[in-house]
Length: 523
Image (cartoon, rainbow, N blue to C red; front, top):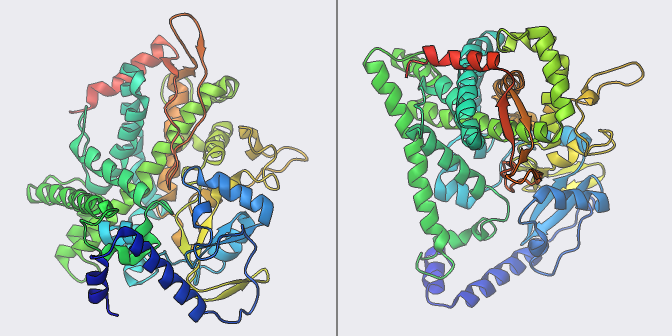
């Protein structure tokens, strides 16, 4: 029965009948394609006939369930969802041996019908399979993000925007999450498009931020049934349960606006002869000269990847930093003492100071480890059958790296639930523990191309904040201390949930230093 006839039939039956048909198709596929396996599958939680582990997939705090499966079933846990194999990696060793060392077959992305085909996120690198378009994106990013000279060129942008962030926090500390979002967005959109954000609500930032939030929603495993049963995408939108189709259309419209508007801005600036050097202007100039192996379409979609990869992750890490400084005042004071000793109190820290601030650098590493911004990363897909550690991993298996689990594995990190920057500083008889940035920025061919930029931006936000502010627990009108509740959102990018804290300038002198940026802002 072809897909057109299938649609005609299903449009006339009840929703219950749709479920029955889907179940029948699954059973037919399952029993008709069974074959003798070259080795056993990895162990995993026992599922139910027909639907497998569908009902056991976590809907929130996914990394916690994956860690429990690891404790029960080992470093690799296999589950089955309506015939789709999913492999959960609960060991950094296994992740390195598969996603890194076998990246030639472990670098594809799963088919995400909602995020990719319906909303349109399959147009940029994040959800692309490792095809030619994927390789072109990587070459574009390498040309702008790789190399010491490129990164050094970004430093003035990072330092200026972080200084402006301090001023926003000084004037309005109650809106810390909004200021952090604006900081991360301001840095990456300046690098991508030469665009200076405006004070207050910036329309360009707001548009892209909403798209990034929606991306996190539509890429969360198990969130949409259409990803497990793709033919639902072909059913009429008026059927019960098809509301996702309207949502997808609205998200797609906003996605296209978010890639077209910045491109139009840069084109206008170039036509007026006042476009600053940026990722987009550089590649548009090369396109005009001719002889380049990419298109304008590739350039504009690539800018969205740079924003998504650099901004949202930095937001989560920097908000975690403020939460941790609220919870650990002694660690805050130790880092401040180091900064005062090395940098002094007549200026703010810069990226050039980083090599001379080992404790502050270790503190930033511990921020990345304590709660990784992408606790489960984005799923990979196996391109070919593989046997690993004696287990059979069939072609098409979705692979999820439990990064939170890696970074809280007591085999790797001592007292992993404790926030302790000293774990990354070697001492006699105690080597430094593994750098969490080896895990939290992805693996193999899917490692984040903006890793160095994101890392430097987070370091600068933390170091400048430590130099400028005392961060402490809030107190209500009765004198009661408000203890922050440590909770994080679910999804691909995990943020701390709002918490109370008090932020004050460390001295009158530092307040004057923070306000000095206002004299040359130019907006």
